[in-house]
Figure (cartoon, rainbow, N blue to C red):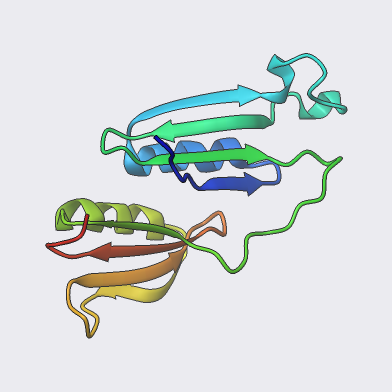
Length: 138
């Protein structure tokens, strides 16, 4: 089986971000740091940065994140959004409320012309999200 998983890049705050997403979505979280693996960091001050993290929820969502060390170029995310959709309105509303906390709503989570509910926001870490609820969403 092949899967497509969002992998978010940060500059020094991946742990804070992935722990926040763990609070939003629940599930199992694993975090590896650069310092855990010999030769993976050129700067000892970056040993505690996240080399790889993975959040796997009971519903099968997978979200990954890491820090970009200072020795590598970093660009803030642009032109892409993480989309979450489903048929459980209460669950989607909970995700929306949590992700919007400290973020910026760009389109409220309400009824669009095509029905259901849809909204867009940028969370407190600068990640763009789109949430969509509809009784037939999968």
